[in-house]
Amino acid sequence: GDVAPKPDSSTGVLQVSLQGTPHRVVGTVQGSTPVLQELNGATFKQPAPLAGPLLIYRAKASEPSTLPTLTGLLGKAGVQLQSYHSSGTVAGEQWSVVGLSAPLSDLGELKSRVTEVFQLHL
Image (cartoon, rainbow, N blue to C red; front, side):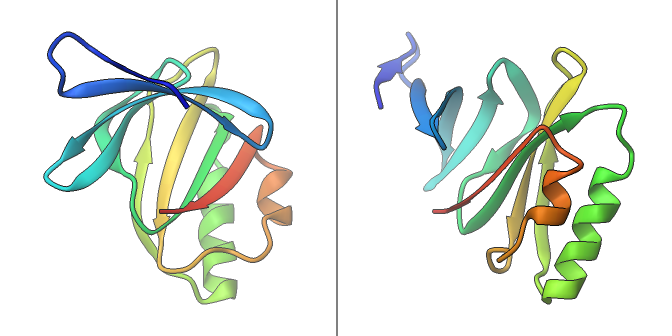
């Protein structure tokens, strides 16, 4: 992707394509860890570390059952939730970045409750 440094040179804008869908990602590096500050205009109050297995999903902000569904899936798979960061709401939806102890092998149950979901291992 293309990186365009901002005037203070501490952050950059990166255009990436995930599963064929373009996403605008803004981040920086804290210490030696890259962190996500914004995804498609949705800002994270606490930057989300981009390390290890990550699950990233977008869901309606008014849908309260997404996180309990996710924790149930993690329990069944024996995977631990290591971090959770959610963005502000944009157009009634918010992004969540979940740090996991291992990737999930099946996202089927979660896909029915979210607008978009993907996993990364960084």
